[in-house]
Amino acid sequence: MEPTALGIALRTLASLLGGYAFLWGASSLGIAGLVALGMAYEEARTLCMLLAFLLYLIIFLWVWATHHFVRACVILVAGAGLFSAMAVVLQQQLTAGV
Image (cartoon, rainbow, N blue to C red; front, side, top):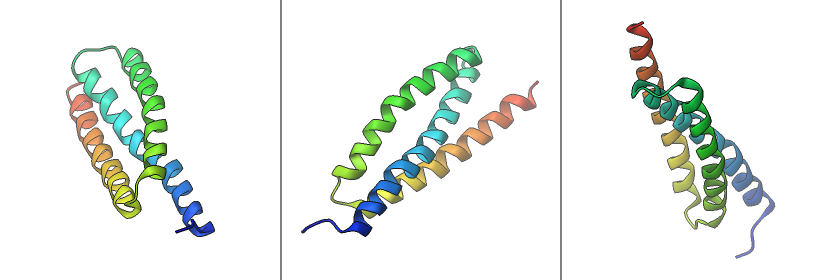
């Protein structure tokens, strides 16, 4: 089955925007978690951004390689929402104690 223009456009959008949203939430959660464990904010941010750079490439390639495009989209959207919500809760707990 040959890919259509719409299929290519959807996979491109999902891999770029979905990967960005997923890693935004994951990075936010990682930074908040590392700060909660005692790491300096600047070091936590640098570490999470370096890891996010590598993971973005993996997610981008995974969206293109998978045969289950809808499942990949659901994982990216659900993960982005879950990680972002967890990061917000953790950040609120950290700033409430200040």
